[in-house]
Length: 185
Image (tube, rainbow, N blue to C red):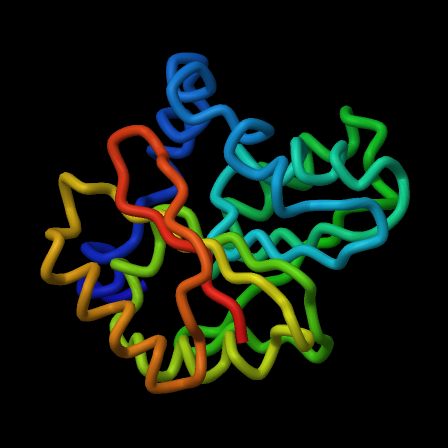
């Protein structure tokens, strides 16, 4: 891993902080995602880290659908893999290792969660282009960014860039300590 990538991406060694019980209280996955995830969907947890949202999304599918837990770090996927075996959700969760500069999925999805990760991506235009191509018609993209890393102006710029690829704002849900948006194609 080059040093630039190491500075942009939360390291595997800090994965435990992403799974902290206090975070579940402040950013409860079901409360955030309930309006958007239904049984039968294919859901992409982009930048899944240790799977903080992955498992709750899989439960929300009620045994019908798939969650693709995707990350650029194999170490994060290894953590999710260990949790899958203990969860009883093996049939609902698949793992996907993203490339250095692309997601690289070969199928369309109904919903994408990009929680606290878009600011880590160097080429956001390329990301939004790929996300647009992955979303099924009427699909939704949920972007949540930490307000301590991403300014209002940066977030607005991110949304302007997404709009250039045909992604439009449909909702602005409130997420504690964050800037958030739901986009659709």
